[in-house]
Length: 236
Image (cartoon, rainbow, N blue to C red; front, side):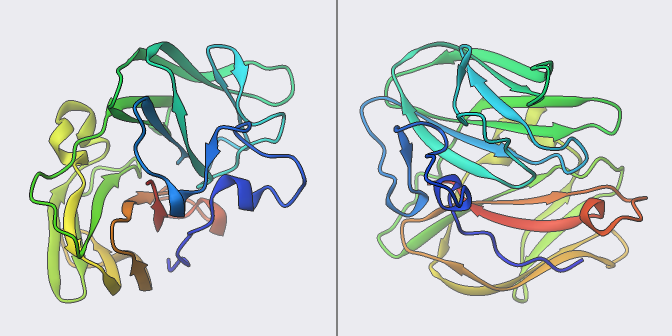
C-alpha cells in the first residue's frame, strides 16, 4: 500500500491553537540537540486508536489524542522517566516503559502492536560515526507484526535486508541512524519473495535531517487504515 511522506510535526498536525507536547515541543525541522536529554515519541500502532501521552504523569498532549503515525520531539532534564500511552477516556494505560534519560543523549519511545498486545519500546538512539556535512540519516524499523523477512530498497540500492518484527529490541544496532546523501528517493519495502509491502515515491531527505522509516499495519487487515504500509517521519 502506498503512503505519502509524513513531514509535519505534532504541533502542525494539531490544527488548533493548543500546542501539543506543551511549550517544549520542538519543530522537527529545527531540532538541534541540547545539553539535555532528547526524546522522540512515535505512535506506530494503527489498531490501537488515539492516545494521550504521559511523561511522569504529565500530559504531553494537553488532552489532544495522538493518532497513528503522529510524532514529536522534546528536550527534558536528565532524570528517571516513565512514559505511558493512555486512553483519552478513562485514562487506562495501554502500554508504558521507563528508563533513565541521560544528559546529552537522545532516546526514542515508540508505541507498537505485537498483534496480541500493545507495547512501548524505549531505547537510546544510536548514530553512525561517519557523518558528513551533506548527509541525511535514516533508520528502518519493522513494526508490522508478521513473520516475514523485510528488505528496504532505496531507488535501486538495498538499504537493509532480512529485517524481522521489532528486531531492534534485541539488537539496538538495527535502529541506528545511518548516513545517506540528502536528496529525493523512491523507497520500497519487499518481502522475501520480492512482493511489495509498501512504498513511498519522492521521499525528500534533507541535509542534517534524521528520519525514521517504519513498516506498520497488519498483514490480514481488510480495512485500508489498518493494512501494511510504509511510513517516513522526521525524528530530528
